Length: 333
Ligand code: SF4
Ligand code: SF4
Ligand code: FES
Image (cartoon, rainbow, N blue to C red):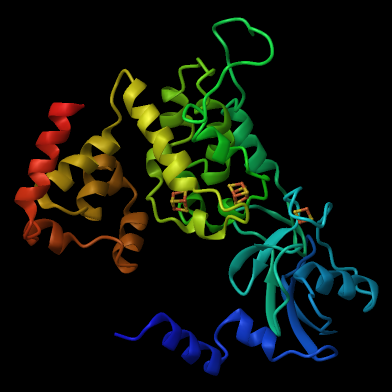
């Protein structure tokens, strides 16, 4: 087996890591920034700028150089410059970053966030995202009157909320989420609104019944736990394990009518020992899946579903242990 260090040496030699790429830059070397430009009513295009590298240069410094020294009317947004306000998120080489925090690279393709309308160049309209999270009323609703300060709270009670409170509302995760990109097909509200909601809904003082809005308005069970949101979160919030999964559990536990998606999901795992996307889609969507023929075909083409495995696939070899786990879980829950 190749050790981690040996792999790193290989990466460094091949200049694959950011460290290796930056190590190749000296002050004054030219950085090539290919920036997506767009103005309303015009076709988008990419414009290439050359910017002299300076030590510790960030993506934001490159953008400032372009607008101030190269006299460009490039549109982008930033405010605090120190990873606090969340306004400078965009994509560099296909990955969501904060411009004020990410190091400049020798060659960069700089684009606006996805899943939000572009107003101009790198500036997106955040209103659709803000509308989604405001609809979920992400503030504490109390049955009991406020008892006064301080309120006794334990670390254990606040273990999920405290993670969600680190959110700087940058919408990087919203851009990275592949399910948000499906739009009206799922009506999934996205990871960022769920993190905002988690700040209140996972707080022990919140007494609002949230299952209906989590299932219907937020469509929380459309999340496929792919972890793309977590990978890009600049605040390192464990979005899936500490916010979305606890919210899913809350929705399932408190729902009067149990949502079909998690029940189907569990049923498939119990029978097969693994998830089967085609069966999940067919059983959750039912006849609606057939009505959405174009969508079903696109899932087939992208190999997201495999009807052959659904019909002829056998359970995994250790299925007896999986079923035993289910029996234990059902006895103890
Ligand atoms: S884990 Fe869920 S919320 Fe996060 S990117 Fe994947 S589908 Fe979206
Ligand atoms: S959860 Fe992370 S990536 Fe998403 S909006 Fe908050 S800080 Fe940004
Ligand atoms: S400018 Fe505020 S987070 Fe980047």
